[in-house]
Structure formats: C-alpha cells, structure tokens
Length: 453
Image 1: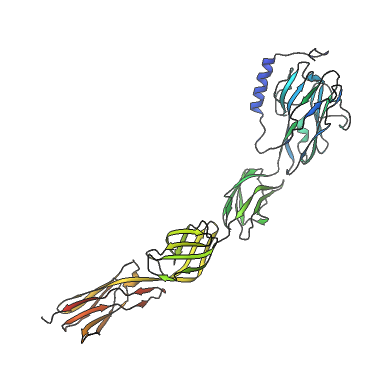
Image 2: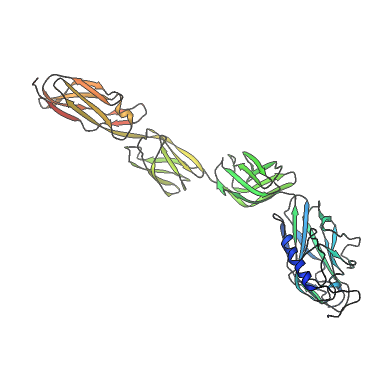
C-alpha cells in the first residue's frame, strides 16, 4: 500500500542515495572482526496484520570469541515493506543489553530488498525514504513489540554492548505496529562483532622441526603471556606488534593448533602446525670408497633432504628416492667421518664413519748420483702427500729388492742416494692415516740408471 499515513514525510531520493554510498565506503566492517549470520527469512508480519514477525525473535548464537566486545554492527539483508515506518526492530545481547535499531522511521514509500547496516560510527540516521546503506540506529518513536522482547527502557546506541561478553544468544525482535501492510527480510541478518581478545589469522611456515621460528599473525596480540604448539609451550616468543608474534617451536612440540594467550583470553589457529620429525641414518653402503663413489643412505624421514655431509664435507648429487633412502657422491676433500643428513625436520647422523680411500701417484727420476721423486695426491687430500713411507727397490735376479727408504715431505717430495747401476722403482705402500682414512697405493714408477759416471 502506497498512501501516506499521518505524520510521514518524503525526502529527495537522490540525496539519500548519495549518503548511502558514502556510508558504505566509510563504514565497512573492521578487519579482524568475526561475522555471524542467520539467513533465515523473517516475515513481517506473517499474517499481513499488526503483530510480531516470524520468527520472533530471530536468533544468532555467537561462539568462540575471547575478550570483551569493543564494537558491534548489525546488518539486515533484503528488507522490503510497503510502509517502512510501521516496522520496529530491537537488538538484544546475551547479557540483556539492548538497542532499538529502527522504529517509526522511513515513511510510507515502499522499501524493496534493501541491505541496511547499523553502525554507531555512522554520521547519518536511516533516511526517509529508506535506501540501502550504513546508518546509526534510528528511533523515531518507540519499540512496542510484546514479550518475549524485554520491556523498556531501551538503549539508543550500539556502544551499549561494549565491554560485555560476546558469546551467547543475540536476539533480533521485529514487530509491525500497524495493520494493512506487509513485508519481509529475505536473507535475515548478521552480526559483525569485534572484541579485544586475541585472534590468529595465519602462521608461517606451516611446518618445521624444533627450533624453527614461526611468525604468527592475528589481532590483539599485545601482552601475550603464552604461546603453545599442540599444547606444548614455545621455547621462546617475542611480541613484535599487536598483530605479529615470533615463536620458536619447542623440542617436544607435537602437531596441532597454535594457541596464543593474552590477558584478554586465548585464541587458537584453525589450521594445525605440523612438526617435522628429524631424519635418521640407519645404514649406508658401501662403508668405504674413493672420491666419486656413489653411496646409498638408508634411514627415516629423509624426504626433502637438502644436504649430506661426509666427515663435514658436502656430498654432491644428493637425490632422495624415497622417505627411507637417498643417494649421494663422495666429494673431493672428504675425510673419514660420520654422515649427516639435513631435512626440513632437522639433522641426523650415522653411528659409524665412512672411510675415504685416497689414491696417489708415485713418481721417480734418476740422475748420475741420486734417485729422487715425489708423491702427488690425486683427489686433493693432502695427508696422502705428507709423511708417507716410500721404498726404493732394485730389480735383481728376477725380483724386486729394497735398497733404501724415505718419508715424503709436506710437499710430497722424497729422495734417495744410490750409486749402483740397475733398474729401480719407487713404491708407496698402503697407508692408514690417523684420521681413519686410507692412502691407497698408486702405480709405482720405475727407471733405469746407467753405470756411467
């Protein structure tokens, strides 16, 4: 019905639309607030006569919030009515505080499928005629709905909820105080509730071993008194700002949600943090070999391995074939020592050492009065070129016979004094080094010395 009722006025629709657009831009829901919807149709009234809407009340149950309320906004979605001034709307919080959102406002001009947000920070009242937008609660008369709505007095500001506990039943009472018109709120209503309690919106990285620093992002994190990983207290944590905390995964952490506790309550992440188990090395084969030898390492939790060291030297060509096996190549410079593997879950070492076999060449030159030569390490392992016993042998009666010996210098040099003519060779025997490595004898060098002087 479109005829004006006594006492109603009309305004310019264009100006009202402009106000609504500006309000939408300035009063969007605050970041970090939680929105709770109830999209059930509210029919005003169900019979088309004066009386309560159906349902009466429409309820939203707020759960899981911490701290006290610092701001509340309410939105009705799809509001239609043939005489808006007939509609009274009362919001009642779980602690009994209440505020009239709308009463005796909007005139007689039909409102059709409007979404209206009630925000105390808005500078504008609900206009006549009603248009979509964000407005402060507007009471042009009185809420006259029956029980179970509470009796007056009624609040006029959404700030009445500040400082209250948000969790519980919030009730929206919608009442049509005159007969002859009808309407509905097609998609029901929603609450946008902000508290001073902490929230966790994300954390990174999502997985890691003990000792990993984790950056936690959220709101109201100032003054945090505890951070836990799956219920286990963090090894350490630092509050960087009201929105970020850096916490260290503890040694005995278990996979599960991250929880932050502040004086205003506790908040837990919706996603679980995954503790990466450390790798182990149970065996490797072969247990010794030259530089360039490929070894196969067997263990657990080897997925994602980023490095393998042999006696502290980084192996090359690390390839993970399964969570229990990887292959790698013994690098130049490697010495005897345990194997250590590094993964995102930490590090693990072998219980026994790999023995590196280093090959070398033996060279010999002869002059009129002296046999001299040198040892050259072929893989860069300098111990194979220092303090190695060298034998000078001569071929006599079909056999090699030792005639002298020497130790190599730090540069791998050796020399012999000898004056007899014959066929000679220098031989470096197999040598075990103090490091546990082996210097493997290379090819001997031989030469013939003339008897001429």
